[in-house]
Image (tube, rainbow, N blue to C red):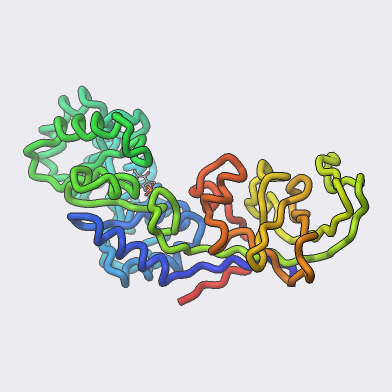
Amino acid sequence: MSSPTLTIDLPAIAANWRALDALSTCETGAVIKADAYGLGVARVAPVLADAGARTFFVHSAEEGVTLRRVIGPGPAINVFSGHMPGDADMIREGNLVPMINSVDQLLIHVEALPGHPFGLQLDSGMNRLGMEPAEWAALRDIALAQKPTLIMSHLACADEPDNPMNAMQLQNFTDMTEGLDVPRSMAATGGTILGPAFHFDMTRPGIGLYGGLPFVDATPVVTLDLPVVQVRDIAAGETVGYGMTFTAPAPMRIATVSGGYADGLIRAMGNVATLTHDGHKLPLAGRVSMDMLTVDVTALDEVPEHLQLIGLHQSIDTVAGFAGTIGYEVLTSLGPRYDRVYLR
Ligand SMILES: *Cc1c(COP(=O)(O)O)cnc(C)c1O
């Protein structure tokens, strides 16, 4: 068996949802876009629904339809990208709620699906999705007459508690929505942790459910064990891997393990990352290949069957740090070749 093993702890995901729910002063949703951040929506969504999540968020209508098949008719499914041309059948059949981003989208929606529920997305400063204050002012009365189910906005810097952008966006969102009789939502994981001022009527955590920062108290969810394919001893001065980027300073033992950039192990972590075994940190020697890593295991008396990249000793954010990226990218890059084991 040469497939790496990706172990996904479903009870840990449920525990993280409950912990974030306990932090929030309102309903707690669950963001499950990108196949539940790469962990598998078919397995993850039912666990969140059992934990108590009643409102899910996805990126696209396609993701919404997939999620609806998984969780059945009960929970609400909100779509961040709104109502795109051609989405009407999916939105109706999946009973999805598009988060309308623009005047154009509102027109498409009320024309194609009159009376079908929708929410509204406002831009409070991030300049990514949602209506700008002027657009909103012009449209507001027409949109509100159609009874939106939710008004939401998104924070650009919620993982930086001291960033003045947070208070500025909060003020903008409040100015645009104060006094309206519609539930509001502004906080993802970061905003949930920033505190109740950001919670309004619904929080929308994603990454924290899956064990990532900025939820520092998250229970780890993912373990990635890479099988050792071959071990060799090399002499001082020999090089390892493509481009000869690693030269042994002394006699060394090198283990070659399965798992490479085709599996989402980001190439930028070559010569930088460590794997772990039994409390030892084992440095990568040389570049990340498509299917393999080469690891300095000189410190081990015996080379085990697997070395670990992600687990209790190295979080997804530690591994992200090796590659100069974020835990979100580590998770959503996890490839299709893993032997996936779900703990229940
Ligand atoms: C992805 C996303 C979320 C969830 O963000 P996390 O940082 O993963 O908690 C919430 N809201 C919007 C609009 C998003 O795009």
